[in-house]
Length: 271
Image (tube, rainbow, N blue to C red; front, side, top):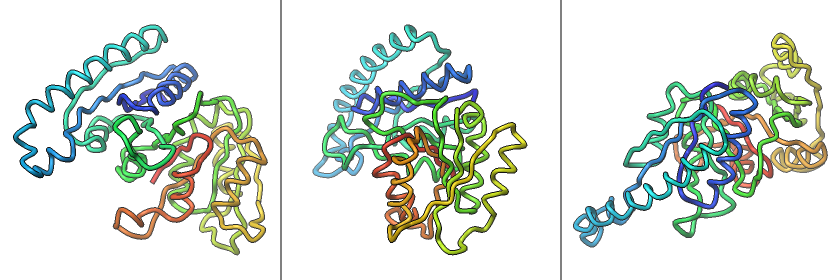
């Protein structure tokens, strides 16, 4: 990972995003590209009740808020001693981030703790970023305090193309992990590509991994996977993001949706 794109927004998830980006940048000597998108409020964007008439005043206030936030973050970046630059744009958050992510090795965004109810709650943008096909996305739980690069990594393997894409994307970080566990949840022959092939692929990159087949025990796959995370003291997860519909609310499979909502550790996704 040599180029990290970091979403900048003054919200309750920013500290966890910053820390994750710092941890990865130090471990891989990566450059952090900060992307700050000044967003037009929904009321104005939709021109409801004449909202567009207030757009210049509102946008001026939002730009001022973002300028102050930028000053604070830039001071923090200088103290951390990492390489960085800054992109400022206006519009919609996901499109602004994706437009700057074409040459990024990793996008860092937040997995919110719950539904957004206020302006300081993090945006739920990881799903849309993962579908943007601009590379892997690291979803960092809002309450996370670090990214344990040299920790215990879990590769959630179901043999799909998406799982393969996630595994390939994660290789630079998996090389730095103390332990890599390729975990399959017993589902009765669903695999497209055997888990042993994943181990062989990793070995070609000098990564020694351990294969674990985990019983469901009458749980759903997502429940079993979350149990694995706790039982094996996992620090971060690699998994494919896949779905079966173009509709936004159903585009992800149930396992992906559950992990996006409840993952207790950072989640590296690729589609």
